[in-house]
Amino acid sequence: MENHQKMEIRDGMHIALDVQIQMDDGLSLRADIYRPIKEGKYPVIISHGVYGKWLHLEDAYPNQWRSMTEDHPEVTAGSTSKYQTWEAVDPEKWVPDGYVCIRVDSRGAGRSPGYMHPWSPRETKDYYTCIEWAAMQAWCTGKVGLCGISYYAMNQWQVAGLQPPHLTAMCAWEGAADFYRDIAFHGGLYSTWANSWFENSAKPRQYGLGSRGFRSRLNGDWVSGPETLTEEELGANRSRFAEEFLSHPMDGEFWAERSANWSKVSVPFLSAGNWGGHGMHLRGNVEAFMRAGSEEKFLEIHGLEHWTHFYTDYGVNLQKRFFGHFLKGEDTGWKNQAPVQIQVRYVGEKFVKRDENEWPLARTKWTKFYLKPEGHRLQLDSKSSEGVVTYEALGDGVTFLTDPFKEDTEITGPSAVKLFLSSETKDADLFLVVRLLSGDMKEVVFKGALDPHTPIAHGWLRASHRKLDPELSLPYRPYHTHDDRQPLTPNEVYELDVEILPTCIVIPAGHRVGLSIRGKDYVHPGGGVPGPQSLGHAAYTGVGPYKHNEPRNRPLSLFGGRVSLHMGPGKQAYILLPIIPDK
Image 1: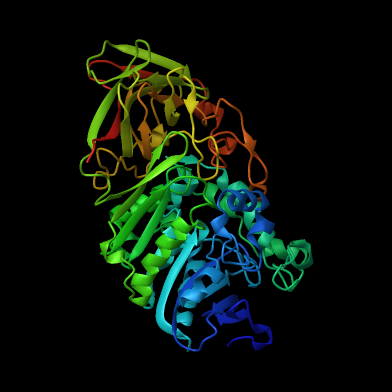
Image 2: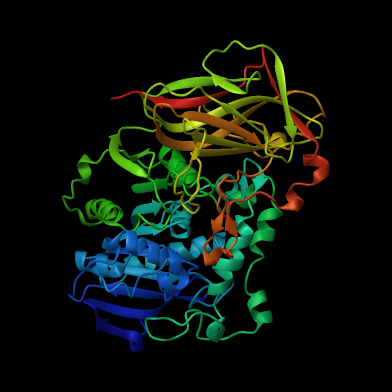
């Protein structure tokens, strides 16, 4: 039932705040509902999560808001922006087009009481209930769409697997889908993102912070209220998020409960990824397009920062064309939309939109560049004299370089690396970085989803996690099971296949591609920059918040010493690159 004490008409919308939606266990979540003033039935756009439905984007992320609105003034055009929150649609841009916008604070977050447990099965079940509740309201057509970035994209894949009857279409913008591989353990290496995110992005929005939390611009009330709980009460009402992740180092039931079940995802969707989203905001979007059971599915990949294109005219128009078609039956031109739409990336943050029919692109010329021990080269010639390259297992490693490309050359798609490796210890962590270098050997980096100094691609693998899934592995996308730890025998040589996340770059003539094989995270040679305040202000040095330096996950006894790369007859190490000829 709606809380009529907080219902009003303003800014061209009928607004109801803190509407209660009862869950199956009796607890009620709080939702804000923005709908057209004119009576009638409308489709719903809903989001559900921890970021606080009353917290303005600028208050949560002032630097991101400032840079985005200065560089892209269309973000605020036609809107007062007073209802703009982090990673959700602006109702002032959607309600006039005949949509109801609903934002729900998930259990234990913002205005909703309960136990905060992000992305848990309980939270997913709650989302299902919210979708079905919205569909049953008198002002709803019965069609519900999901739209949002990151958190509000990741939980779309989760809830879609439960197949809510009234879920009609979804737009998952830059959202992971496999919580083990995409987020927590990149190639088996624990990502410390979980630590910084929960401490700095989730806990400050927990229900019960009350007067110790944010005050809302909407009405001057507390974003995480109305109650102000003690620290002990707050602690008892939230999960130990990072510890929970760290205590499940192998794939299994815990991760399956939090990850997309592709065979059950059958709803039409638009999956939008970011070329610079290696740590979280790319792999899941691509896997969704490749593996989900939906008959009507679309992939879009763009560049620039994580928070930009969802709000620009480019992104909003794409979303409205999609939802106009699937939720309203309008002729938006979507019936002619290509299955794949990519923003082809050029040096200098230049992008050119191009339509494609499939992913990876059918015309890809899969090209192997072989690692050469002499001179640390990457060459097309597969013949090589036998050699070994050794580096410190926790050090900067070694970089192999191509010759300068003779003409502009596009690489778009996933890559894979084959290595032959030995270690002085029983394990080794591989940090693989695909890099672009100019003719004078200066590295060319790009604005990534979160880090402004992002190389063109990353891949990771813990050697003891080298076991492949024979059904899911592809020549260009090795797929590791991460269910069986296979220690190394010191100094014995092992064959490893490493997944490199998709990329897109037109290599200018005279530039080189480099493959760095490291024992620690990539560090941009030009230095770091401060990260978002919501992630603890830690310096971003090329990989954003996605670092892999948790000492409990990398004991020196297992990951110290030296690592050797073996090349030569019978040990042809290479990187497989997706070179794209002109159409």
